Length: 83
Image (cartoon, rainbow, N blue to C red):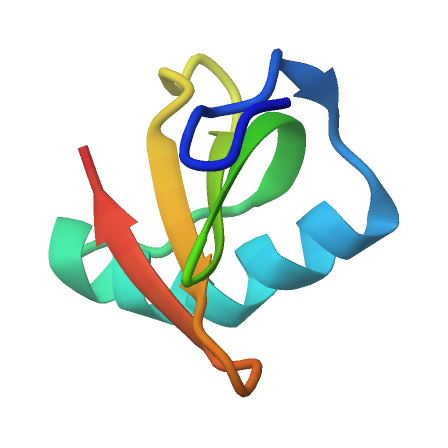
């Protein structure tokens, strides 16, 4: 992987789920709804001044898979961004 370029899509891991859980409330607030399920399905990562994670999340039955992004700056802090 090149520095600055996103990785290939990978299956979600326990770490990815933890990151998604950290930004769940921010996404629910932005979408003005509570998700019955919030399961990380897959992700890409990007190493810059920290690591950005682009995570596909299952949000419940028949819900589209929104893409949520979470960035970890140095020192480690999670923040949410959406595309």
